[in-house]
Image (cartoon, rainbow, N blue to C red; front, top):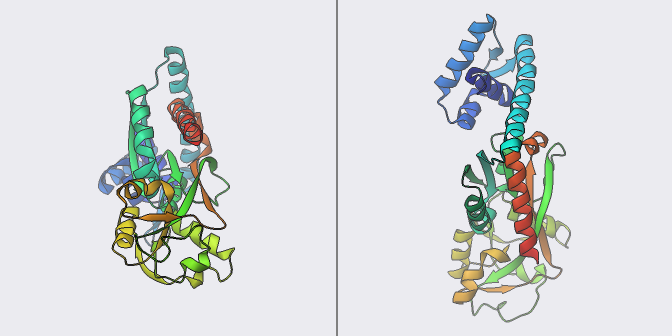
Length: 300
């Protein structure tokens, strides 16, 4: 096991925040500070400059950080090499997923993965797409699964599948008996949407920017933080909305909602996103291969 003090220091240096490091390591902030101070005492020098509630690496801290990167890279290579020999797939991964994916796609995927690899522990964090990408950038999760395009070119982004978004209305609504709808028809009614930062919200805004009028033409009646809350508001007759087709299968069976496709269709990618070096972990490779096969099976 690599030196715990070095692991803590490396996390603080990467995030440049004791608070964020404590969250990522599931430690208290005083415990993180204590570990860093012990390392500074060992080297008899400061590793961080602390000014105005912000921290930065000293020259010595930068040198330690560079060596720590190499140490942990070699440590991962050693673990993988031994597991290649023994055939063991074990370890722990933290996955982050946007709300729609976490609620409607991942339970089956992760359940099947756990059945095949019971020695792998998976932790799941749920946020909107913007929050998940931020967690990947900060290296506080190993793999993100998001529902909107990712702008950071330094991350590895791989499309899993295409998701169709559809209009939802309650039975008896004026739009319930029509075929495909243009967004011009949809925006005649109060619109219920997800919060800012949501992948669904971002994709709808991009779609509207390509149509006449843009996103500003929406009559937003309310903003809600989950697909379930949004569907409930539509069922109650408070407005119309656009959601992933995958999220309304139960309501369609029960007859509490009606869906209509958009013209032109509204599609978005579900994508895996991770840091480049993460793919070198054997357990990460296995999870990605498993997820690719799952997504391929859903498309067929």
